[in-house]
Image (cartoon, rainbow, N blue to C red):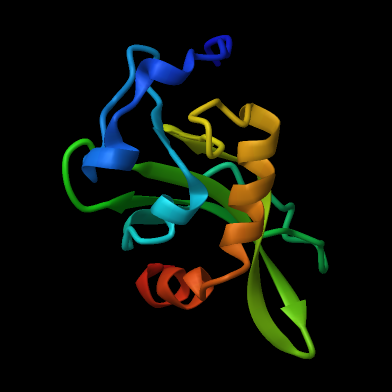
Length: 143
């Protein structure tokens, strides 16, 4: 992963113009409130191929894991990807987000200053809990 360098406040104009721009370091910078206005669409989801090989002698515990990538409409596109694992809750399958979401997004505060990688990641993980991405992935998976 490329090192993170905080950008000065004058790197963006999208808050006032309504447009988003790709910064030199590859990030799209915008406030979380602005990000919430974008519709994110599932671009691709899949199962991880690195499942353990079983001997076939009796039962063995395995895990089913995968990945997904979501994008916004428009140019430049916001992209957010994360890993997930299949778990059972109350006898029903459910997907749980795991790890750190990858993205080309950096949230900024009301003064246009970067919130930083850690805070942006925390906000994105909380955002993932606000919509039903699991149903979209489950309906598109091919076993």
